Length: 213
Image (tube, rainbow, N blue to C red):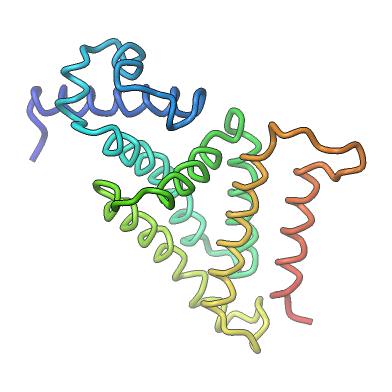
């Protein structure tokens, strides 16, 4: 059933507030942003912000969910491709790499790393965190076609535990990409290797592990 005009306006306002909050969180960090800052950025009254998000943590999780939801369609499209399982695995890693390098400046992965660090230090479970976990499960399940084809199409080593190996590779690479993005503002020593070179090297190492000899 189509949404009523009132419901559409409510949904649009909700998304507008979430997007405004995401910009502020990325610019200033999760801890320093106040709800009044979000109201100012979204150009709405503070009462409107609190009507949708009674607590700041609820808004933070809403931003995290919206951020994570952007990945799902891309993973589903990659997984549905007729390419071999190996090439689709490479496409997933390339997507994570390009998301870092093409979003300004690695915003999506930067926020996810900051959010998960924030969530790990909270004393009580964050509101709506189950919804965030559900999106994570959907993303993981979207990879099932790659996993199943990897067992039979000959593009991945047959002596491996396919599911465990592919999920570990994707999680490891995603975590490393996010971590490098978060640490990018820190000054590196002159002899340190450029983070993007490290990312590409790790991708090649992980892919070489699953490639048949």
